[in-house]
Length: 477
Image (tube, rainbow, N blue to C red; front, side, top):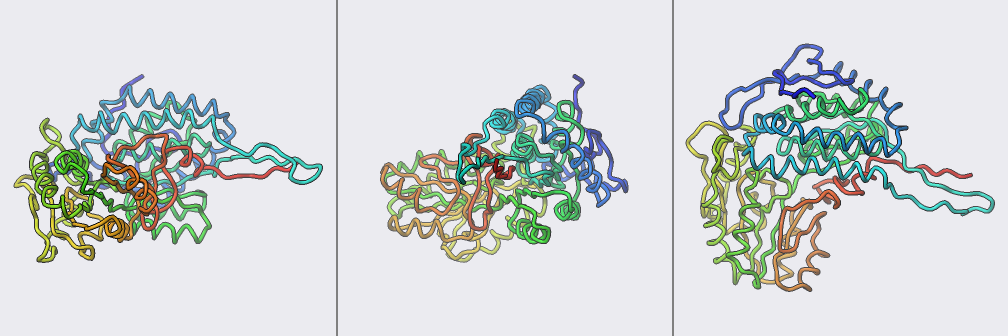
């Protein structure tokens, strides 16, 4: 098989073929590590989304009736092809994101492969109620069927991994897909579509590149029956409102502001060292990143000191710096957002370490720890989405839970304690879709990933994620 190099400009992938935008419009792609333009991508309009939705609708007639075994074989071949083209995918992702290439290769690309392999197997294990006679003389059966054409929108923090989380369950369930990647990071997703095209009927997986207008054109199009989005709360609200007009199903994975409850029976030094590595991974651009550290007042000073010390050992740098622990923020607007939150800190908050951007090109930011934060502070209430964490003290278990739940988000949390009973109380009381105990951030394909409150609804990964892309039909005989 020939190597799939990243094209310039990045093109749409519709009906099994690469295409420029119908108007010829493009968007510049900027390298976050330098601030320089490094390529361009199609900026799609309504005619492009029309073509992609038509291709997906046509392909549905062939893909939807395929047996689970046939769909499994296709997804397994895609997983193998992703491994075979690993270096091209690394280059595509790193060019758009500035991530350390080795970290992306080992932590994220491996997860992409695992996602396709998991859903390949899950395709053959859809659950259903046993046939039974609930009315005399009649037998009832439940069928699980695909929803149809799915519109999907993915973010810029994990472009390829989020594409896999969306595409794999949708295809495993027998749907076809039109996916729009973030306008700043389309390269690895477009390459994935080209790789997958060798193993799928034309039109099963389509990618349209573009901006917010492209996304609106896709999510309001009459053909898709489900819209799945990983993005901001603002985007989720807008998409849910427009989808309601056509009664489309909506699947939302939105923002997070994860609390970390550190109790008095925890070794502050050990917990701080472990959590710092997770907090600043991917420059903190992760909806589940440990962001709000709630620490028992007896451990508060020791934890702040230890965490700041651990943060100072971490380095940000460009992809060609092998010593870099994380890369730049993805875009100038996100860097400005982080700077804005720090510039508006109240007088009682203290920047213990960091708080600055290195004197170099690109959108880098130093690992930052802000102590003395109070619950009503803007930086405690809003998602930072950068290499910045806050630390607050608490006096008892009840206050810790109140502070943890006292934001609008509910995606993830972790509790750190040697007391098993306390840990179990916290897992019940925390209003989040994910709770870790004495660890933070690990995901597995077999378990659901989703939130509550303003973090959205619906699950990625797991059997729950697969079922979100199906609908139930009652058949009575």
